[in-house]
Amino acid sequence: MVDRKLIAAVELFSVLGPADIDQLWAAGDDRMIAAGEELFAYGSDAEELYIISSGRFAISAPAPGSGPGGEEAVLAEVGRGEVLGEMPLFDGLGRSAGATALEDSEVIALPFNRVKRLFLAHPDALWEVLALVVRRMRALDEATAERLLAPTKAD
Image 1 (tube, rainbow, N blue to C red):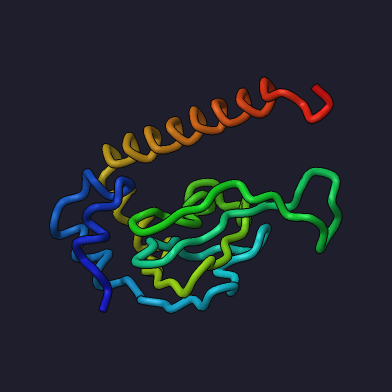
Image 2: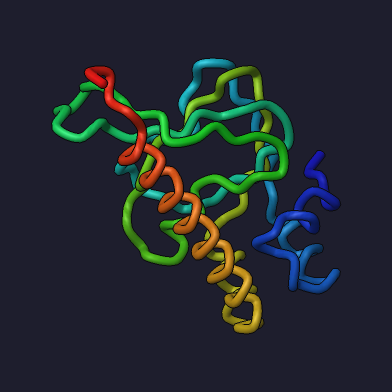
């Protein structure tokens, strides 16, 4: 059964009221994902986002310079309460990364059309989206700086 409290606790939806959370809850669909199974692939079309109910996922993208089926770079590992696959909701493009279950996991799938309808009805909620994007950019900046400043193997 879809976890209403988990949906309400998600940062992306933190400014929505109880009636809005109820709408998401009603639209949600629980999905079981087996360890090693891909939830979605890099570049694939997207029509829903996911909230992790249990388990962990690796977020990965093709390594620079690798061709199709080439080496993957793991960008992050995420777990309970985190949102996956929301970027295409806002930019209309394909998946910017893939997500693979690291262990047996469960997600709540939420259709983009329902989520978008709520954000259009509550434009103030988009400030939370912007804050989330900025936090991710800051984390990426920090990770990039760490990699650039890390000693090389030759040192």
